[in-house]
Length: 200
Image (cartoon, rainbow, N blue to C red):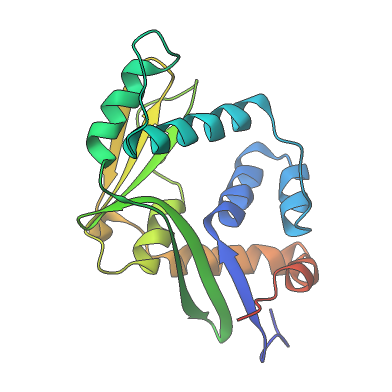
C-alpha cells in the first residue's frame, strides 16, 4: 500500500471476514461487492439473523414472549445471559501497520461486566465455527479492557456458546498485515483505498 500516507482507511471485522471467506471458498463476488461498499440484497438467513437479534434485544429490555412464540426457549436462555448489558456499543481505535494508518471500527452486540457477547443465528452451527473469525481479535483490540468475548449462537432450537480470551487471540495486526499483502498482490489496493477512506 505504497503512496497511501496522509490518509486513514477504515477497517471492520466484516471486511476481513469477507476476505477470509473469499480465500477459503475461491468465490470473489462477495469480497468485491464489500470492497465497493455496494448495498447487497439480504438473504433469508441474514433477515432471520436480524429478526432473531431484534427479538433478543426486545425481550432483554422487558418485552414479553410466550412459550408458543417462535424461538421462545433460546431467546429466554440468551436473555438470562445478556440482560442489563449495554446494547449496540460503537467502538473505534486507530491502528498503524507498516506505516499505513487505519481506523478500526465495530459495533458490539452486548457489553456486560467486561465481557462482549455477540449473538448469532445459524442453522449450520458446528463447534469451533468462529475460531478463525477476525471478529473477536478485532474487538479485543477495540476494547483492550475487555476480559472475554463470547459468541452466543442459536439454531432456533438450542443455544451454543464459544468463549475466547484476549491472550488466546491472534493480534489483529497480523491479520491486517496479511490482508494488506494480499491486496497488493491482487492489485486491489486502489479499489480498497477509493471506497474505505476514513472520515475521521
